[in-house]
Length: 193
Image (cartoon, rainbow, N blue to C red; front, side, top):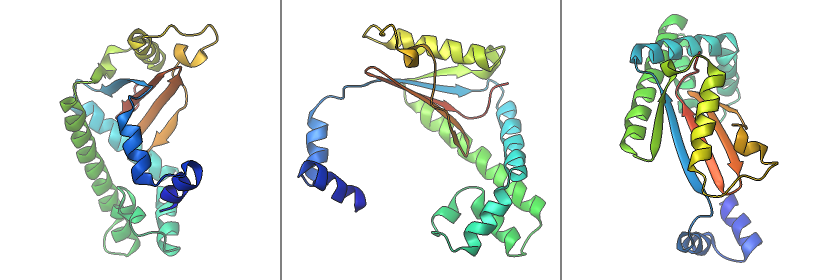
């Protein structure tokens, strides 16, 4: 509702009118879609398990307890991690059982992501094992993104030369850059070495 009001106040059009007009115009952006995976799925799963342990060390349990105690939106508590910790917080299971369920649900989610993204032929998959380190992975992905551009980068177009704008997500990281008329999103299902 807030977004619909914002659109109306800004444009004088209802959100449905605004969306219809947006669909009629071609996007000014070229998508370059990349995904990172592992040749050996067990490596991905091991990294997921490790990431869940790290999140717990960094306060996931305290955060889940605070959200529950402050009666935050129930939908938010259904996210992977929070949902599984509720049984532990209610005294219905041991912490290790909840951790194993978080790891299992996260692995299942990663598998669904892989299935979904592999169906989309627009994605260019990179395999983590093919890179010596994170920096070489970034360089190769940035090179691929540059090769997909149709407009020449400006001399000061730093975003076109490097992937920037890191935002952490529960199941990995999203790298994005807005470079001229290009948007690049790289789905990382787990951190590369």
